[in-house]
Length: 376
Image 1: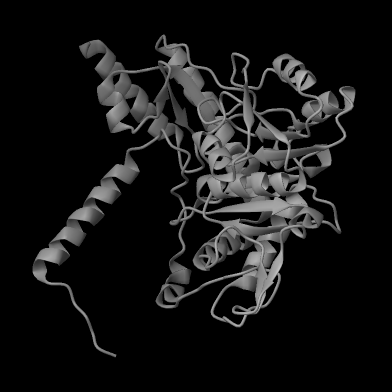
Image 2 (image 1 turned 90 degrees about the vertical axis):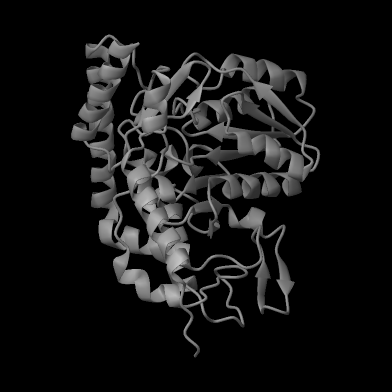
């Protein structure tokens, strides 16, 4: 095989990029991305074209992939999310947005005339997904903490009760990590005698660890969800954006079709699918286990509580939702937002205390914030 090498100029560009990435990775608190992973034992697999095309539970004529690992990853989350023992399915996605697209796709196929309801705090990708799927939607007000306004939801559904309900529930909104109560939503549907409904839970960040909380939020299949999407590169951590979507197999069967070319079933959004992401998630689950994931959640919650206290100590009215790792506060000076790469909206910013964030890093943030405020 011919060996290809970069010239000196291109090598210098790579070196500069690496330095830049290392520096910028160190100094961000505003996005839900875990940085404390080490997948170096998996480096040899980067030499191979791992492709899990087709359905992960159906063999394909393309055999260079990680199907077995993917099935174990899906099984892990199906169990964690209390999916029906004989009626679950899923696959590893490119991220939470694809998982939401898939959940809405299943809902549309089940109820072609359904109306989609989602709160004003819903992730921006949902409106795009509705446009792609040509599905109508109604935006519901939120409560001050970012949770859906259940009274507004009930009144709005009542006005459209002749239509099937497709509900997009947020299990951790983008800015405040508010969780919509799936059990309460299910109760509203029952009270209105809405028999034809579908509930998809967007748990991009919070869904990954909500099962470890006490009290446990109402967000999963046992609470009434029909599909759940999470991101894998957030709470768990991965070098490539990825996620997992779990759904009821009976609903997936409605859209499945056989494809002779690949010798498998066409049941996912994309054709060719990244075979490396399932490997990363499988490795993380196997090495961390339930105990390790619970410890990550405990650490993040403790750090978030510490951050709220430290910010309040310097006169900043910071707050967080119950059992959330996202800390919300008024926009700090622009220099702080740029240095720490803070996401901002409506005059508020947040830091997200992912498992890699330490109290020492929070202290460093407070020090630079205090200095910037004094200089204004």
